[in-house]
Every structure is written in structure tokens, then in C-alpha cells.
Length: 334
Image (cartoon, rainbow, N blue to C red; front, side, top):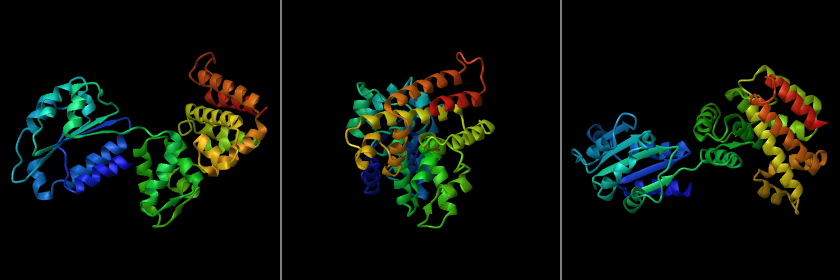
């Protein structure tokens, strides 16, 4: 976030670089920086002649360089934005000669999603000297809830921990998807609202009672009836509740529970830091540890691996996913 703020603040201050090479696995920040440049560097009267958007699948590196070498018309700068530039990955090194001598009146923005330049190559070093190289890294799952809180805090909203966790478990770590859903909530709810699980359920369509978060909690507390109700709900709604996601989240939970057993200090803040969870959820691990000693946790992780293999059709005689989950649940909780 600090690096992004620095890039944005420099642009606002007029300290604009000739090349912005935006790369990496997380497309959200690439889109945000690119959109900021597209919207703010030139005024509306200058954009018609001096702002061009290209797409990697439609152009060659040579065509990009040719456009970048042109002079602006009735403006100090021209902006060239290349979206989906990862489609040029086989020929991107041809940009080297331009990067070594960029046109000072051109701002070239390369959106190179899901890939990154090799730091050992000349192109990387050339851009590093004259421009901005920004790598947008994927957040780990345990970082996303904090990201949600920061984004909402910047817009004068808050969110309950369970509601944030529901979004993470339903949408994963795709920040663009999460951002879109947050925008829906912000549009609907008044400013200074605290977003609740009920808000998420009503406006985004995630059940507050039948989701992986509630299943994990029920399993941790050994609430057999509740856990089976959730599994039955999943069986009736398999597209919204893929078994791969359920097994993955349960595996994360029991792996963290194994870590919990191994901690010398069970202080709440130490547990939260060691497991990478919000302190709000530490009690879930305290409770689960009472029901699942270390030896049982190791067994459960084995059961989860077997279920994962079966869910992919290996040695399961094409068992329905609902049956795989029910068998898994029985093994875990008995």
C-alpha cells in the first residue's frame, strides 16, 4: 500500500515517469494505478489527441514503440496505456531499446498482469533506471480480511469480523471481485454503517448460517447436527459451495489448529499473530483444541487429504460430492 501511495502522490505532484511497468499476480492494484493515470494526467481537452489505449492481443511491441515515439499535439505529454500486455510476453524484451531511450514527452503504461519481468534481464534494469516497476503481489488469505477493513475504513465504513470472513471464504483472494461487492454494500448502506453478516447475506447472497465459516465453527465445537445441516445445504447447492473450497478451508483450519497445539504461549494476541488470524477468532481454536488433541488433528489432516483425492475422482468410484463430505464429516467428528 505504501508503494502505491508513493506512486500516486508523485503523479499528483507532477513527478511523472516516462514508463510505468505494472506487473504481478494481483490485477486489482495494476488496474487501480493504470486507471488513475488514465483519468488524471491529461485534462479532457488533451485526451482526444494525446491519450491512446491499446491491447496486447491487438498490437506488437514495435507498434507500441512507434506510438510512444510520437510527439504530443497541443499538450506537454501524451499517455499510452497498454492493457493485457501479458499477451506480448514472448516479445516484450523488444521494448529494451525504447526503455533505454524513452521519449520524455510520453508516459507509457504497461499492464502486465499475472506475469513479471525477469530481474536479471536488461529490460528490467533499463526500466528501473528511468521509470517505475511495480509488482502487485497476491495477498495471502489471512491478509484479505484486514484489507477489507482498511478499504472500508477509508470510506467511513466498518465491518464485523464474521462478515469480513464470509466475504473472504465466498470470494477468495480476488481483490477485484471483493471490491465490486464492497461497492454494492457502500451504495446500499448509509455512511458510517457497520456491515453485518445479515447485510452480506441480504445484499450479496451469501448465507450467514450455511457457509464454510459456520461449518468450520460447527466442526470445531463438535456440533454434529449443525454440521450435518450445513453439509446437506451444500449438497443441494453444489455450485455455490464447491467441495474443493470446503476441503481447503477445513484443511487450513486444522493445520492452524496443529500450530496452536505446538505454541508455548497460548496468550490471545500471540495466538492471533502466530496463526495469522483476527483475535476475534482465537476462541474458535481454543474450543477446537479441547475437542481435537494433537494426535486427532494429525489424523484429520490425513482424512482431508483422502477426501481431496476422492473429490478429484481418484479411487472413489465416482462418489457424489455430498457423500464424500458426509463420510469426511463422520471421520472428523467421531
